[in-house]
Length: 484
Ligand SMILES: *Cc1c(COP(=O)(O)O)cnc(C)c1O
Image (cartoon, rainbow, N blue to C red; front, top):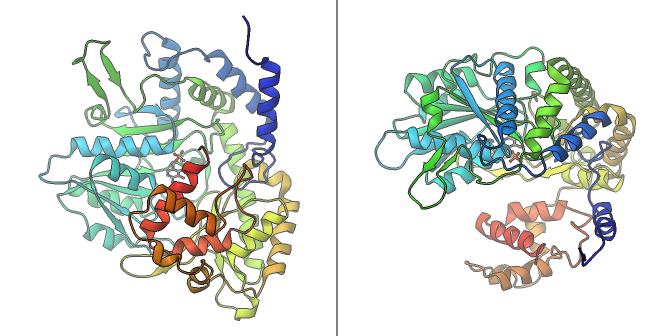
């Protein structure tokens, strides 16, 4: 047929666009991407995706390959997370969908009166805030200590008959803290409350981490768990598992209707028609690696993480937050050294970026009750990190040297940097025109496809300084404008 553009030209354009992306391989980006460093696995995933390209995952009775792959991935996860025959599950499109469905399931199983409550430490992934928002639960976020750990007694005190689900993390994304799962799950069980362990990031790597207390289905009272294959199972984006203890509990996850004139609808997850690509890729990779392969890659992550923890301890002015469990960590200023020797983690991340390595800036948080959490810089360590460690370590050290003694951007500085009168004009609700004007005035709106500004520290300071609803509205505008 007569094509409007030749496929080779279309692909050339895509290649050009991809050039502008952050590098997905080679270990230069220490978040978002999980690089096994094994080219064979990437090729296997690509081949598997290609083989199921036309399949519709909507109906596992018509496309039976989908059911077989899903059953095997779920069985693998259940085995790894020590679930028995009573633990069943689904493959979802990612961690967020797994978390959303865990909340929806608990809400639908909850038998109390009034509005159900979702109880979680403030460090629980933001997907749970989204779930409470989507599914109409009251959100009860419990403040954590400055090292990112939650006080078990405070969590237990907040339990009650209106709680539909309590969430704990293994580990938390912001600080890699592992929550007191056994104690919280036991208390939840006693009160008949469901307990979800969010192992989205830890689920495929902590089974091979040494020296951990039971944190999975070995713990009585754990009623569901999420574990993302597109993180430490190295699958391309679009695959996670949600496991649930008890068939009857899990059936509340499903949506089914015959009350329309079309085909009977039965959906285990949120989407209707869906790709089987990521499922096939995740299935193929987990089969190829098996437990031993995953363990070998986890061991590499563990070595790199231990090395980086030591390196940060060695760099004057920085410190690792808490005691990270798993291949991720948060780094804050070491306030035990004199001011002129301190390193601000956001200036540091900006400087590290100028050396070609991308770390993730995390804002500080003023918690509703209790302590303020310091702003930090996040690193996720993957197997590829080990092969580039020398270069990474050099960049981390020399960047610290370059910004040591430079004070953090304070909230006052951030607000003072705003154009005259701008703050007063930020009356809610902001419409999209005014939001765009603000973004342009502070230099945040991308006038081309060049992405983020070079220095992120001032913007992170602004995020913490402005009222949350204002920032949230501005960020919505920022992202919406990237596609307009
Ligand atoms: C990544 C992550 C999620 C959300 O997963 P997505 O795949 O990004 O949707 C949830 N919880 C934790 C702990 C995570 O690390």
